[in-house]
Length: 424
Image 1 (cartoon, rainbow, N blue to C red):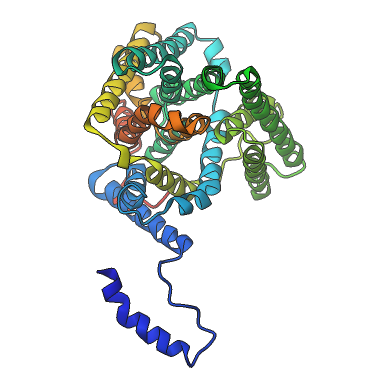
Image 2 (image 1 turned 120 degrees about the vertical axis):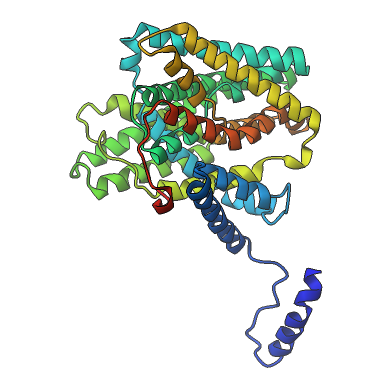
């Protein structure tokens, strides 16, 4: 059909080439960069329309655009185009993980026993519940059940941070949602490293892989994150506080960390999270404490969530795995809410439930972690980790809405005119 429509234009172009020899051949397909740029515009418009007309978080529009035009559905974005744009998506996720790491306040946790109890309970119960479901109900092997639990136990830091910023949310529920999200992410990264070793121990012929690879992941990410944080603080100390130059140094150091992590095959999300944590604890002089990322990181978020939406393997979807993913999400949600309600603390039961609902998002970090583990043994990992991937796919759409609902219900969001909102 499309070839029939383009045939007259192709013939006219070829006739013109006979006289204008500098003209390139008639393009058989749109350039991948141009096509992806158009998709970003579509994702932006979808997010803005959903926000203005339905009050939905913009993130949902970005994911829908990527899912619709990705390889699994319309196929307008090829796998090759996704591979080309992956470094930008890594940079986007890295900057958001840097910010969530900078907001991690362990001092608050150390002075609040109930909060510490809630955190440990939520992390432990989430992992145990998901592991038991994946192993006993779905029938995954122990190593892959542990991998599924490591991938899905944590909330999505990028989604939570963006929803909080989009909603201009402030208050106890908001702060606890951010804290629990950051801590569960940190715990999942540790479990992720352990699971990498478990998977190697199960399938590798050389036991060194099971020992060295987890160390490479954790130690490598820690060293890169520490070095880049120290570099940023060292240079930023020579510049005026809260200046544009400091913002530039912060972003440039983060991008250098992203590039170094990619070059050394170390997870970008873990490296930038640890860089953020290092900045939070090492910045005794408050050199960068009040220096915020530019609002342009919202634009990077569009790229990130369009790529994540396009990366979801909807072509492998079956009703059975869909039901299993929903079952796992229900178990995960109950574990998180139950742990927070049980822990008690200074918040009312209703607000503790709101915190439990607010930390439900599951998104980019889970997808990237799943592909990291699956890439170790592609012939086995791809099918074994389809469960957490489809759980992430479902929560790509439901998670942002749940987080926003919790913040609104807690009365901590600012009243905004949706029809006048921009990207930021």
